[in-house]
Image (cartoon, rainbow, N blue to C red; front, top):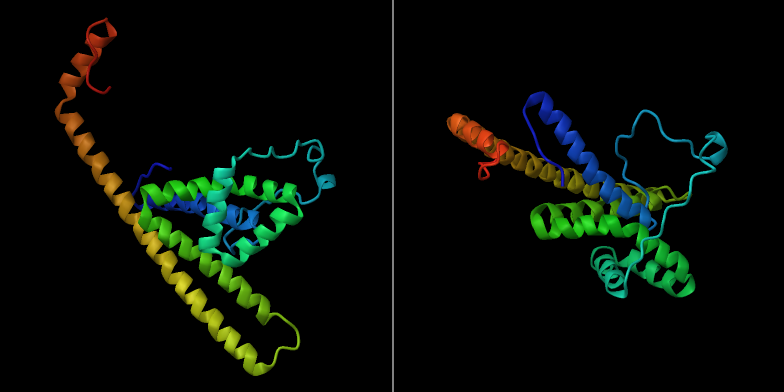
Length: 224
C-alpha cells in the first residue's frame, strides 16, 4: 500500500499517485475479465499497439502465467459471482470450453484480486466503495452499449439515457466518497507523522547519544 504525505502541492501529487494505483488495480481486474476499461485520464504518450511499431516489442517475452491452486481459483470465482454475476457466467463457460484461456484469464486477474482482498481485510470501507465503483462502471458500459445500438426507438433511447445518467451520477457520488476517505486517511497519517516528529525533537539529544553508543558497540538505541 502506498505511503501518504500532504498539503497543497504534495497533497495533489500523492492523491493522484494513490488514485492511479487504485484505478490501475480496478482497471486491471476489469480488463482481465473481458470488460472495457474505465474512462480515466491517460498518459500523454502511449506504447505502440503493434509489434512492428516498436523495434524491440516483437522480442519481448510473453507475460508469465501465475500458477494458482484450486482454492485460489475458487476464491477468485466466488468474488466474480458475488460482484459481477454475468461475468462469472462467462468465466464459467470459458472454464469448460477453453480451460487454458480460463486459467490465463484468472492468472492475470490474480494480482488485482489479491489487492482487493488485502483492501477488504485492512480497509473494508474503501473496499466496499471500490466494489460499487466497479459495479457502476460495468452498468454504465452495458447501458451505453444498448444506447449505441442502431435503430433504437426514440422513447427507448430516452429511457436508456435516463438510466445512464442515474448510474453515472451514482458513480460520481461513490468516487467523491472514495476521495473523501483517502483525504481523511492522509490527514490521519499527517497527524501521526507530526506527533512523531515533535516527540523525536523533544528527545533529540537522547536519541543522538544512544545512536552514538550503538555505533561504538553498546546496546541498541532508540529508533534512529
